[in-house]
Every structure is written in structure tokens, then in C-alpha cells.
Length: 308
Image (cartoon, rainbow, N blue to C red; front, side, top):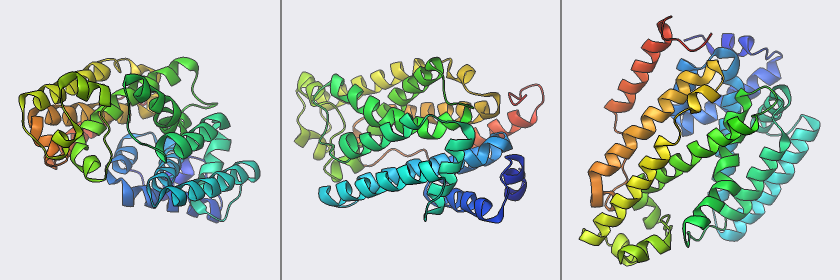
């Protein structure tokens, strides 16, 4: 793995202040999401890493503000952050090093600003004001408003000039699968925080109440509901096939690893059944390491490398 200093140099990032901005953005990602950070550092082409790290730091920053505090505090925090981001993108400067690094990445990679503004708008509405989904249509609207642009403010930086419609649509399919898996894996924690992330209409279809889920009742109806949701997630995951070809070569090992990790977690959810209501379904320690090491070996094998 190249040193961070050489990675910054490979990306053409010069000047001590700017290099420090990217370093602080990368450290924020490492503290919050060590697995994605390690995947980027180990598998992505070095010229892509700093911009993507800044993008992930920005996405996490918005998520944190949208999910922290009272509804009023979230609204006020997002309004202030939206103003700060707008000023940073316009001037290329900000008091916040993460926003400075992200503004530089957006400018140099040519990411269209509408993805950023769309994500911030979704954070202030679909996420900060989240009260569950009535049906599948509500879930899809949430993806369009928040989750899809949230992924593209990060992954969209791989494309010089931003993603074209086919590439953006590929990441929309990825988001559909990833969000379904996340909501199933995090059922216990979400319910404990007062968030029901399964559409209420599907609970009704199976004769399951929210109280059944909150009490972690292991009934035939609950098991049928969870199995049905897992099947929907599996179908969505199958629909992401082809995304690898839409990623730039230097990011394909990372995308393949993300898909493998998502498939691994979904399999764990399927095995857990109603136990997913008693504790969140994590990745475990061994499987992610095994998946990452396999990807690293493939990355080093010239015959298997996609970074050409």
C-alpha cells in the first residue's frame, strides 16, 4: 500500500494546507468507517483515493448532522451546513478542512453540483424528518431523495465530469440493494431508536404489528415477513450485476469488495431470521478480513487486476 504522502502526490494534491485538509478528511473516515477506508487505501488506484476519501467524509458529515439531536436541532444544523457547503463550493474555501477538501475534489473531478444540493435537500426532508415508510413507493422516494444522491456525492467523484445517466442508474440499483440489506441488518438498533424501516403495508400483509417486532416475537408471521424482505433484498442485489463494468477501472476492486460484503451480510440476515430482532446483524470479524485479503491478492495478480 502506498504511503498517504505518495497517494496525495499521485492525485496531484500539492500545498501543505490542501494536503492537510485531505488528511483530516481521511482521518475522519478512518475513525467513523474503518472498513471502507481500508478498502479504498488497499484496493483503489492511488490517484482516486483522496477525492473519494473526502467524498465519504462529506457524506458522513451530512449523515451525522441529519441524525443527531432534536428535530429542531437537526433542521437548524442542516440549514447552517447547507449554507457552509454552498459557500465552500462557490469560493473553494471554508473554515472546515473537510469542506475545503470536498470542495476541491468536486471542482477538480467536475462533479455536478446538483448531486450535492439534492443530497442536502434530502437530508433536510427525507432523513431528518423520517417517520417510516407507508409502502414501497415511499421507500423508493426515500432512495431518490436521499440515499441515491448520498452515494453519488461520494462514488460520483470517480468519474471525471460526473456520472453519465447509465452510470448513475447503476448506482441507483446499488443503493436499492444496500439500503434493503442495511435496514434488515439494523432492525434491532433502529427499532430501539424508534425507527421502523420496513414499509408498514408489508407488515399488514403478513399480519405483523410494530409491537411484534419491538418485542422480538418469533412467530410464523414474523418469520414470513423477514424472509419476504430478505428475498426482496436478494432480488435487488442480483439487479446490481453489471455495476462493476460501470465503475472506472481504478475503483473496480473496491466495488467488487463492497458487493461481496453486502452479499455476506444479507446471507447472515437470512440465517438469523427472527434473531435479527434481538441484535443487529454485523459482518463479523473473520469474513470481512477474508474478503478483503482475497481482493488484495487479486489486485496484486496482474492477470486479475482491473486497474489498467
